[in-house]
View 1 (cartoon, helix red, strand yellow):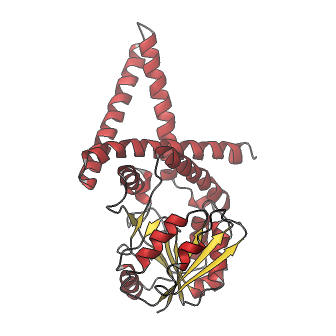
View 2 (cartoon, helix red, strand yellow):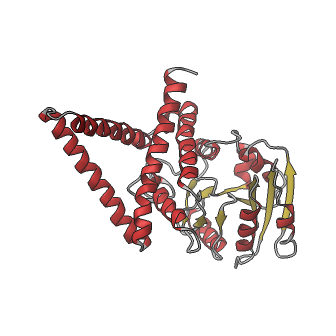
View 3 (cartoon, one colour):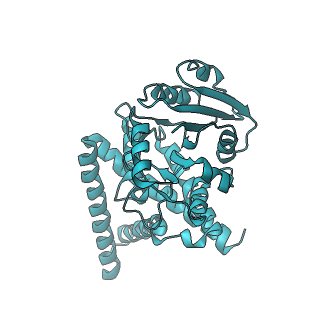
Length: 331
């Protein structure tokens, strides 16, 4: 089987250098790499050209239209009979294609997704964010997990599809924001076999700061409402949990403030605040202990609690704001 690896790129020359370096170490060599520069002001052409001769790599530059349409541009120029889609901020283990081939032969997927993990070279914050995005104790745990609710939806950081799927679907219909979920839902609706290959993981380099992570996850929360408007059935109760967390946290802060400012608050308010504080403390303790065990680091465990709270608040506020604006107010 010959694979075509499609990678959209926007102002990230250093990332593509590291990704291409990881691809030179693959045991399975039957693949090409197509880089689509999507209107970058910091082009990576020089970075890519270093790998000519080491990889079957092709570089294209086009005006900016968004990563979804950049992938379509790559699909149209691909020679493979199976396409692999990566984001630029990943590293590929040396046995990735071996696992993909085994998974395809075993399960016969027309399209698949794989999980992500944290590489040993990542910073403590990136490892903490990776924990939060894959933890069973945050909504990140529904990504790349066999225990997901409903059909599995491959994500664009690690996605594969046959050429037949591309020909039938004509690729991505959205240029950006939740374009991969829309594409996955459409593949399933057309009757293609779509699933997870758990062994085919990649190392996903997360945002370098919590501010960047907040902005990214807030964007994801808004994107979930975009998917709801296209496919109402795809909105599950679990997607609203971060908003429940945000509202509950706001109420708890208000209760604690009232109890602090007024010397004789009601017994009911005291009891509600106490229950809320206990539940929040137990949740953060659970996150901390599990993160310490998973990452084998107390420091990363502490950062993971902050990452999880950042993720829940950012996603929840993005989800709620977009729901009010687009669904309730019809704007």
